[in-house]
Length: 393
Image (tube, rainbow, N blue to C red; front, side):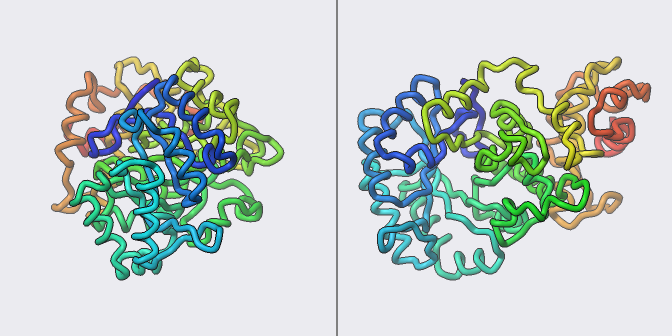
């Protein structure tokens, strides 16, 4: 298993995590899934469902091994009248959280995830109703260790991050959703018509979100990596071609700030397919050629950090140079600072990472060999000139 830091939380998390589907589809599978996870080194799981039966079954399966797992459980996901609800009523939220601790058999949650906010007005309600303050109180008491937010809308997520209220973001990431602008209606992500009308390209708000999270130290946990399974079928995929689970996971893990991908496995076989990512070859993980040949969508002009441009005759790590450049730009844009302004600055973190590279943009020969290999027609030589100007070498 591979592990990554979850933003600035200090947590080392497995790149593959268990999604909630594993526990709600069949409560009797909880022990089987945790056994598989423990054996494979998976140490992170998400539990958004307030279903009492699912919580109790998972609590039973956790007995004797609570410390082996990092739990992401959701605040404001409640159970009423025999079904799940998303609530903004503080009393309901508090009762549901206490129920989760009792049924899981634990006195703390590692990441308390404020549940499912896709609209600015909803974020206003969450704050006005005291839910963010409640999460901060739980953290001060040690009953949750970190505060998160789950969302499908990059605009809302960017706002929450810039306001400084969250440390972890659970976000829906896959190569098709990344084409779509932010929306308050999550059903748009599944609507065929939004993918019609010709080629789409990388949504700038989503790109900004990932780079902002990296710059701010907000760790991302991924949901919907397979678009509910649609991306694994050529007939169902909005892109018009299928991907493998390994390619989907590889794409998510290449996005800035992403630490772990929650596998929405419904059975042991599906979980094994996700865990297989860690033993996959570079060729099996490679998604670039598949993306470049999708019949319905295009990533033209956007660096995907896929490293197909390598090797460089000057031995420049082109993907990392581009990544650090994008992070600097994102940091300034998020603060309303335009390049060329006296206030434009390179954060110490990005400057340090860039300086630590063995070779820098100023060493670019402008030979263009990298551009002949790039599947996405990125203007790499221009990026190197831009990076040299921003970093100064």
